Length: 166
Image 1 (spheres, rainbow, N blue to C red):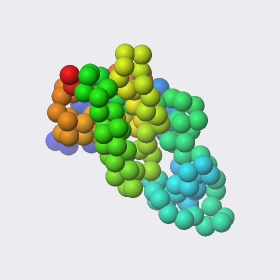
Image 2: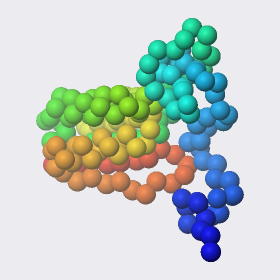
Image 3: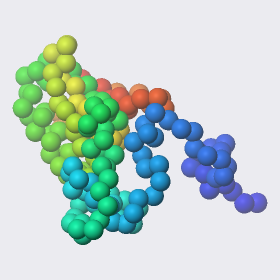
């Protein structure tokens, strides 16, 4: 008996994936090889975005991360709360930037869009990829302990992660 190649249970490999709100920033068609993002300089080659230099004749298409930043439509949101966050804001921001820099070297689409104070005295971090929000939350928990909540995402909006330390 042959098994389905699908990564989702109950779905055969021939059924299309359900369209989600976040898919509007994914590629709708394969790009020419190479293609360069005029905003950040990322290069699309062999089916993935990476850093490098593009030939002069490369097509110019804005990458999904730059489109999200321009539209102010994050794929991930990390909320940071608690007395510790208020007292150690510089350390927390430094840790977040370090993790972003490390991830961005290999994955140009993983970026922090903004780190802003929220109405409750904490911080709100928006990211261009949901996985980056999760990585940032995990990095805070490893470095500073505290409570990390990563609710199961719905398919209709950004991944939400909550880190708290009193």
